[in-house]
Length: 249
Ligand code: PGA
Image 1 (cartoon, rainbow, N blue to C red):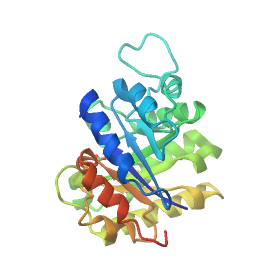
Image 2: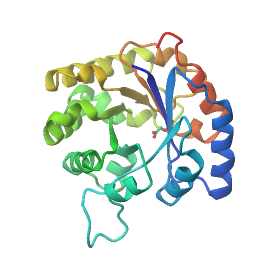
Image 3: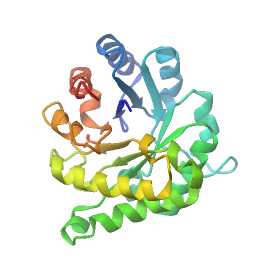
Image 4: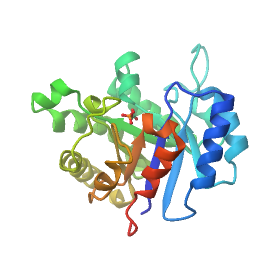
């Protein structure tokens, strides 16, 4: 299974910067051995389709509506994302859970809508600092993932999971490889109990991953890639993370 490195641009970018960034990425991207994608703001999906169609760099959205269609002002449905040939959609990013009140149920429905539209949901889970300090990490991430597994059923093998400890996102405070691996192993076991095809589910790590810490994180047995925020906005950094994927992977 190839490792997957996904950039999460969050609410950053513009037509000109995006074009320059993806051009630099296309020039530096290795042809084989690793898969890479960028999850961009909704208005730029058409630009990505135009610039990246047929290239080795995939693209995706940062959210997908839990609703199919209708009177949901401001929402973007998974079928709309399909019109722009998105391969991925992040669902349940902690910033969505925190600032937009997304519950486990909502996130699970979003994952289901994405799958129904042929888009791979990247399901984000992760504990807050308070939850970690209270010894509740395992409980929290298992609850978040269980909700998705329960809702999507036999399609579980089609998802990507991203473990992103909330305290590590945008803080420069990365989980140690041991801390990350321990949670990934828990998630792997949970997926194995849910589906016979757990072996093909990638579990990404996210939270202040950068060129200096990527190699060690990506060497862990249950870390199948990365979800990169800040460092994905600078081509040299994102490319350097991609280049640090262990050769044998
Ligand atoms: P970060 O963000 O790499 O800037 O910590 C990761 C994410 O939120 O996906």
